[in-house]
Length: 386
Ligand SMILES: *Cc1c(COP(=O)(O)O)cnc(C)c1O
Image (tube, helix red, strand yellow):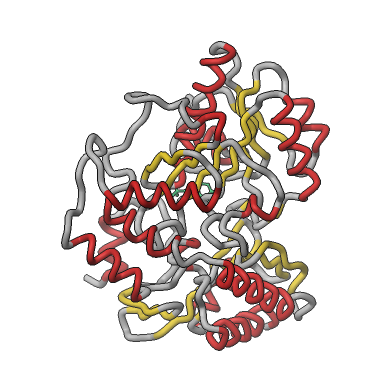
C-alpha cells in the first residue's frame, strides 16, 4: 500500500492533507518520495526556522542524544537551565516554564494569570479577554480562548471565563475590562486568522490599560516568535513589555518545545506542584533550541526584514493580488483566485505555500537563500496571475 493510502486508512482524519510525502530535506529544499525537489515557503507551519536538517542544529541535537535523552522534570538538566537563562537574557523576562507545544504554553499562561489574580484579589477575578478571529490552540481551554465561533462546537462544555474583543478597537477593549478581568491575551500578528498585524497604537494603549489596572498582558508569540517577524519576538517592535510571553513553533527548530516566559509580576506565581509536564523542556529539544536561539542575532533579523520587504515588493500590485499583509517573513497574500487552489498548483510546480483563512500564507525558513526565495516567488506569482 502506498504511503498516502496507508495514512488515510490508519491515521485519524483530523487533517485535510496535501499530496506530498516529505522524505528528506536540506535548508529550504524538501524532497518527496519520488525524488522531486520543492522549495519550502512554509517551514512546516513556521517550525523549521533554519530549514531542514541545518548542520549546526543537527550536531547540537545529536550530541545531546549521545548523552541522555530524558530525565524527569523532578531532576535537573543543563540544556533546559541554559535555555531558560538565554531566553531571559534576550527578553528581560524572569523565569520560563517549558511544555511541548503552543497550546501547552498558553495553558500555562492562562493558569498563571488566574493564579496571580486569585492570590491577590480572590477567585472571582478570572476573566481573560482575547480577540475575535484569534487562535490560541486546540486544547479545551485554548479553544475557549480562541475567538472563533466555528471552533466552539462539538466538544462542549468548554471552560468558561473568556471574552472576545474586536481587534484594533480600543474603546471596545476598554469596555470589556471590568473588575472581573485578570488578563488580556493577544497575537500581535494573527496567524491562523489571516496574517493580520495589530495596529501599534492599539497595542500600546492596550498595554497601558492593562498596566494601570493590574491586568496581565499575555502575548501569544507561538507563531510570531523566534525571529519570524524580523525581531526576536514581535512585541519588541511594538515597544511594550508583556507580563507573559508564550512561544513554540520555531523555538527548537523542528523539535516539539513550547514555553511561557514569565515577567516580574508573575515570576513567583507558579509554585511547586501547581503545574508540570512530563516531557516539557526535555534535553534533546532544549539542545536544539539553544542552537537556534543563540544564532537569532541582529544580523539575521536584518536579513529577515530585508527578505520580507523583497517578497512584499515583488507581490504588491502584481496580477491577481489584492493585498499583502504581515511582518518580516510572516506574509499573507489576498488573491482573486482561491487560496487553496493556488497552494495546490504551487505544489505541482515545486513550491510549498500555506494558507490562512482566505489568504495564501508564507512562512519560509528564516535562512532561505535569496536565489531560492526569488525562484519560488516567481513561480507563485505565475500561479496567482494565471
Ligand atoms: C500554532 C499556534 C498555537 C498552537 O500551537 P500548537 O503547538 O499547535 O499547540 C497557538 N497560538 C498561535 C498563535 C499559533 O499560531
